[in-house]
Structure formats: structure tokens, C-alpha cells
Image 1: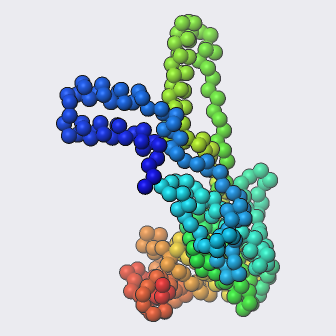
Image 2: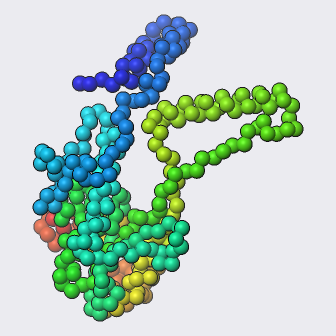
Image 3: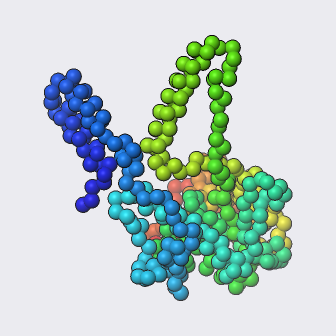
Length: 371
């Protein structure tokens, strides 16, 4: 088993702490011994934390992975599935690597939506200025003009984006298991227009601006000696803050801030926005929703806010492991009655497919998805 350098550096402290707990020398001697141990530690070396740089490729090829003809992610050279624990005992680094790969896969799925499914990428808000944060959805060419049928897809919460059901399934299983592409292609084959929502794209991240604090020495009303003392204290505080930051964030990852997208700052807001600006404009006589997990909650919130419109336009809703709650969301009696007639929630179960599954909530039927 490998032992990190930082662990070796800290080992004397651990031993000393154990001695204290077991009732070693008197308190003064213990304090002196610990101070001596701490004075010998090379803190710069310790703060490196033995972690490689968080510098990852920005393409699948750079990661040496590719999707094969079955839609499975495989290593280009070995043909093996993705390995999370690429570096032993470095969970944080492995997680960052996994997240970097996930971002590449998100872009890859976007490309598939446009190239393989022939969907159009539509920027929102529709009246956004050039400088403000923006998101987007995907629509088929006939999404607003198809006079008969429109299919609307809403994924769940977390890191997934438009076109995905589960990143983990994309990476560990295949594209058909983890993306919405099979649903989209089948819907289009059967004559549906399609709109793919992007409810987790609620903000953009930008680097935090550096705050420049005006030096206290600029205050000419104070005596020179007092200004010097304040400047010395200020420098000492900055030195300590930098020391802490170096320990907390040894690789100097950028500090970021979130700029929320207007009228799309949450999945619920996004669903209402797309309804108001796109779905209500569609010519389709029958609108159908497929909503997974938190997407089901977003749909119920849409119903609460646009009940009459939804009832007049939506024909049926297929939920999968929906996390909605008609009590917590305060859905009224008329909404619950409509859901019982027009919604069905397929849930993970060992029962045969479509077997009724008991529910404690008085809303839509729950049946087995046979997982």
C-alpha cells in the first residue's frame, strides 16, 4: 500500500496525539514536544498534498476514449470500459477527471442532437441581449408547425443537460441507456414534433473579479506611526489569508461566481418559460410530456402555474421515477384529479413491467418500470 508524503509528515503528530490521549508526560512537556514537531514540518511540501495537476484533456481523444458502434465508451488502446480510480488513493483528483470527461460528453451529446437527430439549437431568453447570460433548448424543424403531435422531454436534476437522462449510464453503459436519443428518434419516426428542455442550465460561471482594497496609508489624517502599524497588521493578515488559501486550495483553482439566466434560473422557471414562449405557440393538437425524476416536479409546478392552459393542450404525461409531491407543492384538487386521468409514473421495481405499485399520494398511478 502506498503512503503519501503528507501522511509521513503528519505521522509524528498523530503519534504524539495518541500519546496525549493515553496520558503521556505532563501538559507542559506535551505542548513543548508538539511545538517542536510542528516546527520541523515542511508546510510547502505538505500543502502539495501529493496531487497531480488538475489539468485534463478537452476531447474524448485526449482522454483516449471513444464511443464504439454499440454506443459504449471504450478505451481506444485497450478496449476497456472507463476506469474511475485512475490514480489510487486520489479520490478528489479522480472525481475532477470524471467531471472533466462528463463535460466533454455533454458537448458530444449536444452534437448528436444536432447531427444525428436533426434538432435545432434555440437560444433563450428569446429576447436576450448580446452581453447577458443565455441558455438553449433543442427543437425539431416541425416542433411549432406540426398540427398533430408534439413530444416534450424533461430530464432530472444534477449534472445532466439537454439530451441526457443519466451521465453515469452514458459512461458506464451506453448512449441508448443514458441519453434521450432513442426517445427522440422514435418520436420523430412516429410523426411527432420534438422539444428537448435544458432545465439544469440555469447560470453561467465566470471568474470572480479581484477586489483591490485601498491601502490605509492613503488616509492622510492619521499620524504616520499609526498608519505604519495598521499597514503592518494588514500585511500580516494578508499573509495569513494567503497561507490558508494555499493550504485549502493548493492548485489555485479559480474562484468563480454564478450569473443566473433571466427567467430560467431554476428547472421550474425554465419549464414555465419554454411553455410560454414555445409550447403554447405550437400548432399541435396533442402535446405529450416525458419527464424524469425532478423533471416530474417541474411539470407539476408548470401545472400549478398554468393549469387551464396545460389541461387544454396536454394529452398525456409519462413520468419516470418522478420526485414530485402534490402535498408539498400544494397542487389543488383539480390538478390531482387531472393527473390521475392523464399521468402515469413508471418507477423502479422488481415487479413485472406495468404492474401497479402502491402509492401514498393521491395523484397519478404508479407502475413498475421493471428495473
